[in-house]
Image (cartoon, rainbow, N blue to C red; front, side):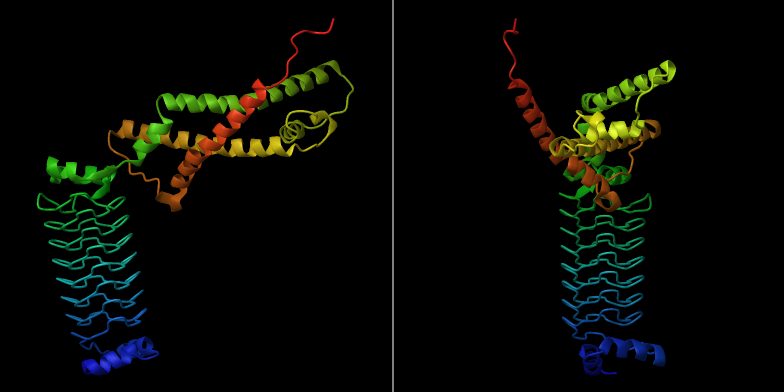
Length: 369
């Protein structure tokens, strides 16, 4: 097929289905070299082992496309959408991919030497064993990308984001790799430290989420949090001990009195705001609402204390940095941390209100005779 015929098929309604069907039925592997497919909607297209050298695919939609083994040498791919696309063993040497979207794309063993990927989104992309030597990756987002075994010699990673990227001892970097202003987590930096000069390490913007947790939940702060948790639990523990003692005495002395289960007594005490619990359920909305807020805050604080201590123990025992990110687990730990940051001000407001209420209580200066 001629280029014009190919482009006409691909740009027509149902063009992708027609193309994929033709590839299956006729086992064709036509050349689309230098084809003009700018802005085309090519979702799910099968371009495997296709010659797309110097093709114009700017702003094209290639989500979930199969480009494994395709020749995209020198192709124009500015702002192309390659989300979830398969580019295994693809040849992308000198391709222009400025602003390309490659979220969760598979680029295993892809050849990207001298490619321009400035500002591209490669978040969670699989770049294992990819050739990125001499590639331009300034301002590229490579968070959570798999760079194990990738070649980054002479690559430009100026202001790129490498936080939580996966690297290993086979990842190739060196003195010629430009890391100026590159955002990177401590764990990844420690993996690459041996191959970088001190000046390169100083150019990095290192984040350490374990240090963030330790600054709030370790050392003196750990004891402050523990004392706060103990202060929160103390009235309920004391109530439990009191009622348990009364129950034990009642059984010993054979006192005949109406009773309720311990769990119901504790719940009444909480829901009723600490008073009138013997008379039944009488919900104190303000008191119970404050209890729920403070309980949730302290539960989150306790979880972060546990996590911080666990990470510290892992580091102390192994003598090595631990891979951890507040952004892991669908933002789970980050969400908990943010709850404590903003919840602190809510707790402070409650403390100030209770303090004001306590200090403004009317007390008699002389008792009646």
